[in-house]
Amino acid sequence: MPAAIIKGTATSFGILVGETAAHMIATNVSVSSTSNKVEAKNISGGTAAVAYTGKKDEYSLEGFITATNSVTQGGVVTPASTGLTNFSTVTGSCVVEEITLTKSSEDFAKIKYKIVARDGI
Image 1 (cartoon, helix red, strand yellow):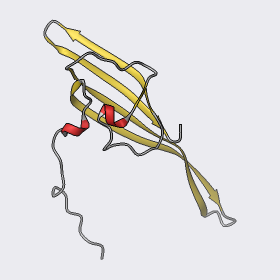
Image 2 (image 1 turned 45 degrees about the vertical axis):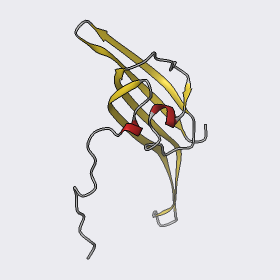
Image 3 (image 1 turned 120 degrees about the vertical axis):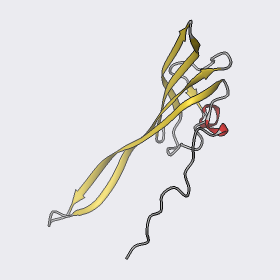
Image 4 (image 1 turned 120 degrees about the horizontal axis):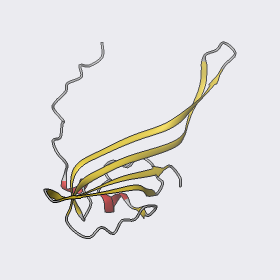
């Protein structure tokens, strides 16, 4: 019989200081890791081998601006400069694909980044 899975003993709440970029107060951080799966079948139709290719991480980082934004679309950033070190699963560069800046007369200025890292690129 397998051991019981206990939930709640190792949870975290909120965003840690090390998980936010230097020029913002992060309010939301999310990561999606994906890959392509290729299977080789044996003569009986069973799976003989599996390969995972095209690994990538997609990060969404948003929050309130605390300094001048120096990140540019298409620019390369490091996981350390964006607070994503704890989330990185691939060895490729982190490329900024989208930047959304929101300002209004009734709220603080907000910024949102979509950052993609592809394995080996």
